[in-house]
Image (cartoon, rainbow, N blue to C red; front, side, top):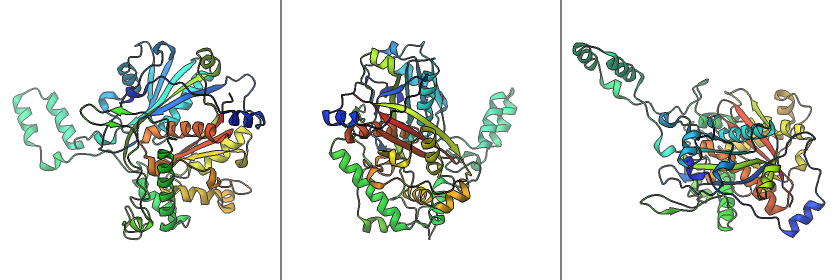
Amino acid sequence: MASMLLTSLRSSPLTSVQAAQFAKSKKTLAKSGVKNVVLVDGVRTPFLLSGTTGLLKRTGLPKDAVDYIVYGTVIQEVKTSNVAREAALGAGFSDKTPAHTVTMACISSNQAMTTAVGLIAAGQCDAVVAGGVEFMSDVPIRHSRKMRKTMLSLNKAKTLGARLSLLGSIRLAHLSPELPAVAEFSTAETMGHSADRLAAAFGVSRLEQDEFALRSHKLAKKAQDSELLSDVISFKVPGRDIVSKDNGIRPATMEQMAKLKPAFIKPHGTVTAANSSFLTDGASAVLIMSEEKALAMGYKPKAYLRDFVYVSQDPKDQLLLGPTYATPKVLEKSGLTLNDIDVFEFHEAFAGQIMANLKAMESDWFGQTYMGRKTKVGAPPMEKFNTWGGSLSLGHPFAATGCRLVTTVAHRLQKEGGQYGLVAACAAGGQGHAMVIEAYPQ
């Protein structure tokens, strides 16, 4: 799957209007003695409702120009546990190109990208392909623990009698399969259940959640119809149709959404299928290079990848508050304020999660009590926030979303003439990530 995205990436220059805006831009975040790391471009397959279709590869980048490949995945297939390496070989890259796979729940491809940044900044590499892949239509399903134990013992049995005895010990309960865990290991709580509790804790109503989810779908539909989602590449599934766009964008009406029953906390919960992200198949990839190497190869970078942070907090009561904690840290690290940011892209796991984060960021009490701040963080203005849709509407292939967020910020900065963008996301385990991206002047 992932091999289908290791592609040739050429970006176009800014318009004269955007160039003029850069002439009177804010300060750059370049640091003396530190290599500039650039996003040359990013692509992704259409994000697809789980069970509908698959992925395509599009090649062209000189294979010998890539020094390293890093990919993220969450639901791992045992046969391809290092999916980055298998993808690289499947795409025809040299067997001399190292590759490794990372996993950090919903911020796995964020981790892949920042790993690439680290390799380049340290002078170990000049060009790295980073990305993420998730195939929720065919997740690995295991035998029960008792059945696995019996089968392993059967394999070791040396006599016919021992084998027959083990076979005779198998009961119907042994045949019950184990699905991939959907609950937090540390708390045994599903993310949807946690999102419902978080929404209640911050007083986020069902109406607010449905309104935000509908906003996401409407903005995604508008962006799709306006051909703004240029990172999506078409792909022909063998024996099936060509897939060229995300197929989970489905604007409904508030009346239709209101009819849905709670999905997790019943009967009084507020999180439903309509205001949650859906199971999604998809893959994404970005080409990250040192600025010097990119220019030498004739590429026109889209953006600089600047400061980033990772955060962790209580996985029970603050599981999905990563953006609230990560945003002020990355702004402080960059020497920026919330007002300096032109484009915000936050991962939308649940509408309730997004609204809870926005309310936490606007709360002096939360900032003082839990974050040790004198005042609130401040919430992003909605006119700058996820204006091309988000995970609620575009879909959320766990490990692929991070690259989509970063590529979207780069494209929005070019389209809107802004200079700074901020990506933020939550992840299982109570973790989170944020990164500042600076538009590349032409």
